[in-house]
Image 1 (cartoon, rainbow, N blue to C red):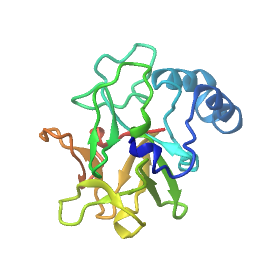
Image 2: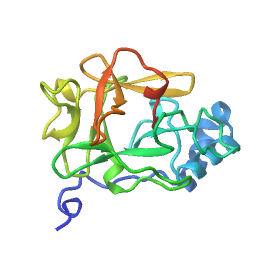
Image 3: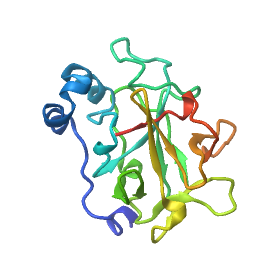
Length: 205
């Protein structure tokens, strides 16, 4: 039996292109413009890049991207660079592991295992819950390894979004930024960077 049909933390609000247009009129028209938002949604299968902490709500996906094979009409600020993959989303596994999923072609949206429910803890801190009903956080004693095994929100499940030049990095409870381990055969993801480098600037939308 599919665990997603058994444990689901409420309805996942998928951000599609139609709803994106409504948000554009209400919140994003001045900041980004309709044409840029439309290209963003087109590039991500109806999802768009979050550029303001106020827009972190409902369901999100965490994406690492590369400038390689980037369509000419999509600004680099939308498809932020990553040295390995064109587009890949953080994926929840049924054992609580979190991996960087397979490369995705332009325009393909995240799948269900790549969607996380937002829990707002304060104006600047959030927690995220996988479709398996577990909270994302740092695994104790694992050098900042990101996992989704917690049944409740503790200190290790607190995550701070940090914005810079329209891009966002995620700061963990250990004071380090989320990054992808390029040397990991399993595609592990860690809160391990002291500073948010270019490849730590990720897309959440």
